[in-house]
Length: 176
Image 1 (cartoon, rainbow, N blue to C red):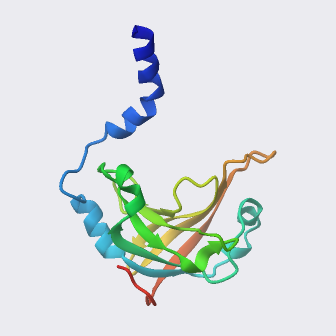
Image 2 (cartoon, helix red, strand yellow):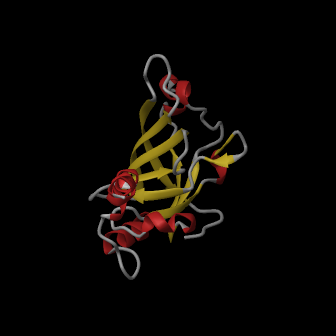
Image 3 (cartoon, rainbow, N blue to C red):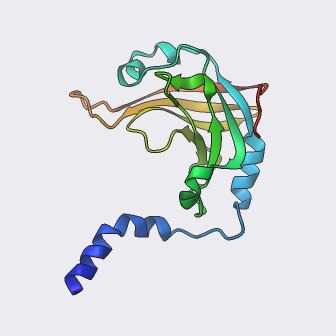
C-alpha cells in the first residue's frame, strides 16, 4: 500500500507543482486584467527580415501573408483548468491570417510571463511552430518571433529567434 501511494505521488508530481501555485478566487488577477485591457487589440508584424531568416525557416514554415493577430481581454475558454492560478492565465488570441498549412491557426492564446508585462502569444502544446514573446512599447509590442520543434534535428538546434515589432492596426472583426 505504501509503495502504491509513493508511486501515485511520484507520477502526480508535475500536477502537484502546477496546483501548488496560489489560486485566484473571483476571476482575473488585477495585474492580468490591467495588462489585458492595455494590450487588447490587433497587431501586424513589421517586415524587418524575420520572414527570410534561414534559421527560422529551417525549423518552421512561415506564412506568406502578413502576420496579423488579435489579442483579446477574454480568458481562453479551453484553458480554464490551467487559468485558475495566478501565473497561468490564458487569454484568447485570434490569428485568422496565420493559418499554417491551411489547417490550424499559428496563435490561439496569449499569457503573461512571470512578473513583468512580457507576453507569450502561441498555440499551447504544439510539437512545432511559431510563438511570439512580446513586451508593450507605447502602442506597439516589441520582442521576438520564435520557431521551435520537439523533433531535435541532428545539429541540436531546436529553436531559433529573430527580433520583431508588432504594430497596432485596426481590427476588422474585433472580439475584444
